[in-house]
Image 1 (cartoon, rainbow, N blue to C red):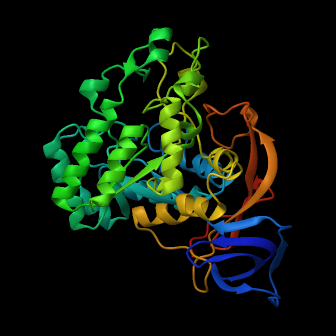
Image 2 (image 1 turned 180 degrees about the horizontal axis):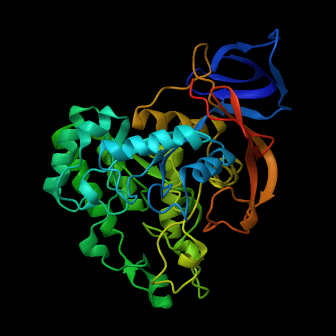
Image 3 (image 1 turned 90 degrees about the vertical axis):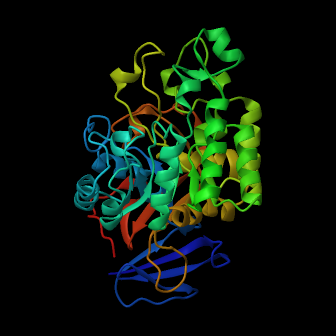
Length: 436
């Protein structure tokens, strides 16, 4: 199969490319990037001045498969991913059963190959059943394709257990992704501890519950030499800790989510909208300003969604009883374009670093760059498309988005995985997944 993409702005900071040109793809690989390219036979697309970037990657998603497929499964989750512009995702292990053995890794990878629309990478649990005690079968999981380790959803509570996890992961050259939550401090907290939690009568979730474990895990990273990735960082002080750790030579990276970049605890009001109940919670405007600064200055390594789908009936209950989490795959790119690129906080090259280049490096998957021989995993973006987030516009099974009703500018219109169109003109195609 051959594909010729014409009349688009191709952007790739890895190769220094940022110009209107053409790309020729054959058999799932990039053949040439240039001008006046020729093709004997194949598909030719005039992209009308849109932007093409190396395929977007989200290294923090929950697809609920196995065990809670009524919320999301590997088919609906990957449809949501390509609808949002992603060619690759990394699944978290807090499923039922937990992804803590090679058997479950195989299940996820094999099913994703059968029914998926994008590449699905698997993170294995650090500890069996996410209990924070006995180590999971880490070596077997690596042998069967696990790309990283995390107990996301809870976090490893014991410093001794975390040291063993990081020592073992380092033997395989794998990153440990840390959900930093001191359960003794957080307890039954519902939203950020402060004026809003007091006014609404909801139990507060102190920033220290996140920051203490970030400090602890960076010290364990310094001790073991294991690469550490801080998941869904939310506070100004936490960001300063990571910035200082990087300056001191600790192998630490971090991620932020669009909802922590563009929403605050002040968005939660007397309507008690449970779509705004997330773990960790929405923080203050001061924290948001600091996170945006961290994105701009390079302290933040990547933007992820923490895509956490829940059924309507689960969210439609008292705030204290509703589960934490919101969906994000189908709004992430648009939120970043609207909130960061359009106001001039970052440029398109920085967006590609945050949502394509660095995520691949952190979990150690193949580089995708605009040069001959690289995989043709591509995201096409209309930077000027205006649209509104509506409940009936999701490919995900769940609609628990905190951005419903928001107006955005910018959206993915086409996604190619190995040169095959998984999303075309904004619609998910019937094309089977190819992983050349």
